Image (tube, rainbow, N blue to C red; front, side, top):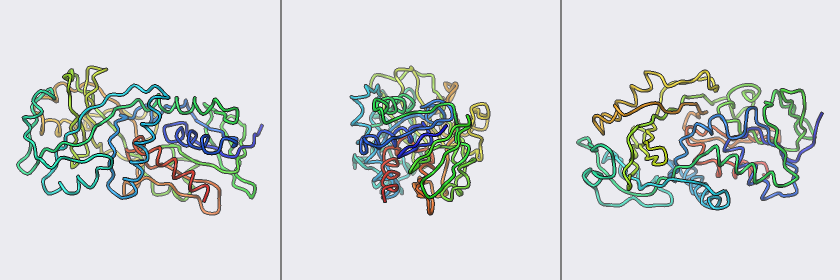
Length: 353
């Protein structure tokens, strides 16, 4: 069994969903097929913290972040998104203040340096700073449900009879020929497509995608966030710690806080049964929490864990496979949700070029 498509998208996570949504809007006459080896919106997307603040450490990342933030705003009403927003405060080394300001995309960071006392009623424990650290205010953090967004985008796209979705069948091989690409699926079926976008998240580093040249530098790293079982006050604030690559985000609908931090376990297998929050992960988190909010670590209970594909420089990839109508998009390095609309846009432009 085989069907012909103008575009095949491999991966039904947030990046694949945005690629489908933008492609269907721009090319409504295209026949588009999306393939997901599990269920749409599952995998790394379902475990993502979904916290959106438009920042970027390079000009490309800032461009991607600006495009993405605007697209998330555009779909908020049509998809009836339920979100949580909080004012953002930044704890940074004074020597890095300029760099922090450069990262801000659609907001500015106030010039005034603040005392931790201003957060006395907006956190559940007092905030303490190091001797060389400062507290600044700027921007708003919005928490989304990435899995629900992915399903919503795919559902909206599938209102078109030109769009089909295959769940529960992974891609076993890609046969590239003069007329396009034949995708062989686990269930024995095949899809022929004039062009392909591979947006398989942490599965990019595995077969059959590992042979594609843009994926060879990718490594898979664990991504962890802990839940802090303390009820956020009505005007709770989010606190970001750039040098620690961590943040504390209020989740009032859950009566919790989310503490995201940088785990250091590499070369993970992207399967739920192979991933868990280890004692080492908790130890890393506790050191950061106790440094800034002594005693708060006692309220940490449970959390979420999965993994993501990382590039050597931390900047996502969108690259065309040499001599083939195939684009590989991913390597979000923990920022896949935040940048996915921009990456999807780049992938479609790369195919067009």
